[in-house]
Image (cartoon, rainbow, N blue to C red; front, side, top):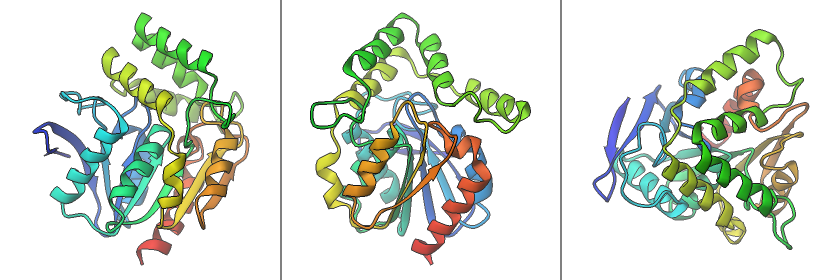
Length: 272
């Protein structure tokens, strides 16, 4: 557990455990590094696992620049350079997937592979990309944040999962407790991150990606639609896709054992 300083002199937080090939876990919107609890414990037995709090989130809240993908990518570049990380695998969930794509473009010489979990190149639907949330729905999310960020984030947590997705009442209780303990960003950071999501189109970057990519998604995802993952598979050269049945937006939480096994298999294929 430590801090690093980016090019702006801002202090940003990260968790570190294990040794070996560097695996960087990038959390989603209004989350922080603790959401990777099940991956940190499992993967650190074989790899060096680094889980930063993205700017404006978790302990990385003391930032002065915008909370957007360009700034997030600059932060990660500074992070990798300050720790001299090479042979990196970026694992991005939801918004973290877009951060991974944006960062990989500038870190080609350091990135060995990438995993995109429940990701999308465009969060908001458009005439030529119908696989995102409607503008009306995104605007509704923004309005809810301005009214009560805590309540909006709690409602977002409820949409992550399908009603019959959990294996047991105990599992559901553990996962929901984990989410409830995550520090909610302040309203300005949450809104800025949502605006970045709503207004960013990563499709022009997909052809630039050159390292191996694994795409993971749930077949019933209501936040980053399954068709968006299919699009990523079709437009990233050589990408492999893994779909979890009866699963929503967070397969790494509800199907952690199987997801971790697939992550280890992919990591070994690109790191060894």
